Amino acid sequence: MEIDLDKRYQTLRVLWFAMLMNIVIFFVVGWITGPALTSRTGSEPFSLVTFVLAALGGFLVVTSFTVKNKMLERSVDRQDINLVQKAFILAWAICEVSAVIGLVERFVLGNSDYFLMEVIALIGILLHFPKRDHLRSASYKSPAFGGAGS
Image (cartoon, rainbow, N blue to C red; front, side, top):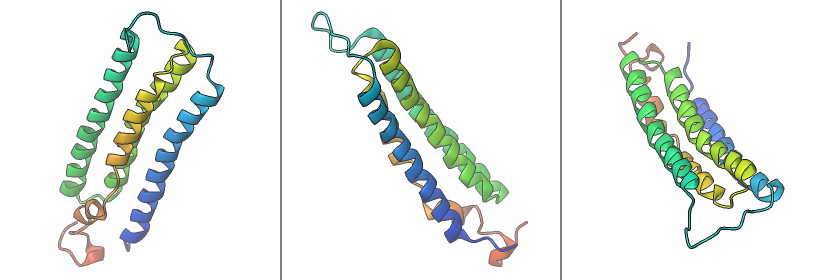
């Protein structure tokens, strides 16, 4: 069975772009259709809820890197190129949870600080741009490439 790295890489890039645009759509939907913004009382720039949700979003983005790296290591050890795509999709989905939390914050709390969660998710997905080397590393022992492995 021939493994076409170019097609797999192109698929990963298309999926990456789709996830990136999904975050942009979340932002636009929250901005256009969200409830009226709540007015802040006092000089407190962020409420406690906003801070906790932003911390949760940041934690999820950091966790996505850990999960992706573990799965990429496993893909190299097992020489399973399918794990590479699964690793990226899972990492993007974990980052997207941050954006969904921001959208929920916008609709439930009517808070204008929801954009912070969208930005955190956007940065996470931008940093998860797929590289062709990940695919090569997981397939260098493949018989389709003349390797000696599985």
